Length: 207
Image (spheres, rainbow, N blue to C red):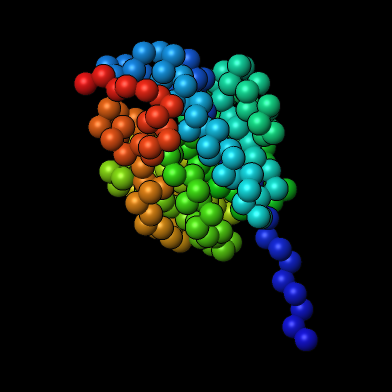
């Protein structure tokens, strides 16, 4: 009889900007309260999706805002405060999780189809899973083994920068093409792809 393989568990890191400061590029179509509501709704959807993933044992929200951290704790997540930018935030959370799990998923809080996260595979010890945004330059989702010496490169052309980081570390980047996971909300042009339920809750969009 074959020896059963141990179950590989993971954690999810969700970096969030304080809701009152989020989505400033949507100022031409939404007022501050609506932008805050949108950021909160998408983040809530991501949290609800990842806590249901069968092999996830920890969910960590890292944010620059105390009120956002309090909100995230009310949703059952761990929270960290980091005010030195996205890459520092993700690095802090990655170190915080450490080797308590086998792999770590980093997922932005503004993807609008978080149900698709269940289709993203966990990596082997020599792999990093990358899901680009719809423009093919950003990194909406990344899954990598825990405990690596790995530098994060969120920002302009982050997907290619993360591929280069993999090469530097002797890791194999595995790209997962998922059109729905590629949709996030940054600009007014993105709003046409919002799911109907989110559009209904937001109300009229100014043109």
